[in-house]
Each structure stands twice: as structure tokens, then as C-alpha cells.
Length: 160
Image 1: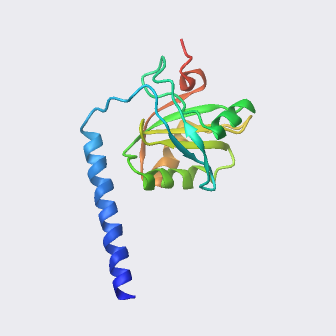
Image 2: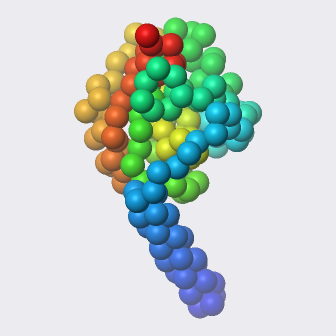
């Protein structure tokens, strides 16, 4: 039992060090992002809901809304798309922290944290709203900061 506890402590410490190192590396380096990404979305209960895809960067300065089954379904129901650039989100544990905080909100119909583009992708329930400040405050609760928030056409990459 003592060995198990030591293993857990060491593994946790290693993970925290790796996340911190990756965050420092990310904060000091520009990353070129490929035009098409494929990875899997985890919905609110952690179940896999299929591949997320992007059409690249739109008219805005940041990534556009990642498309997953959950995101597309929420958009089809008339939800508002939001993409927030997250500082320091680098690993699956980072994404889990963001998912945990944002998925508890009744305004959120769909969420996807894209590790490739470092973006929080949200679709709100039709008629619901969430201010940029609320998004920033929730991100801080998860341990991260928001650099920029895009909504509507800008989030979808269709703004002119």
C-alpha cells in the first residue's frame, strides 16, 4: 500500500512538472497550426462523440470553432458559438479541468477544448448568454487565463 501511495505522489508530481514545462514552452514559442486537425471530442460525461475538425483560421486572428457532433447539434438548435483562446492549456488534464468547470453551467449546450489550437469551444443554449468576463472568471477557476473571445460569425470564421 505504501508503494502505491508513493507511486501516485510521484506520478502526480511528474504530471504537474510536465504540464508546467509544456506551458512555459508554449508561452515562449509560436506554433504553426495545420489547416485540418483530427482528434476526438469528449462530451460532458467523458464519452467519445467523434472527431473534431477545423477548416483552418477564418477572418479572425485566432482559431475558429472546432466542429464535433455535440457542437454541430447545439448549433443546429440555434445556440451561440464562442471560441476563447486559452493561455497554458497543453494536456488532457488541462482539458478535463476546463470541461469540469464549464460543463456545470446550464448556459453551455456543448463544449470542446482543442489542445491543438489552445481554444475553448462553446455553444450556448439558445437564448442563454455568458459574458466575456464570466468566461474569463470560469477559466481562472480551472487554472487558466483567456487571451481573447470570439462570438457568432467571428467564431465560425465567417465574419467579413
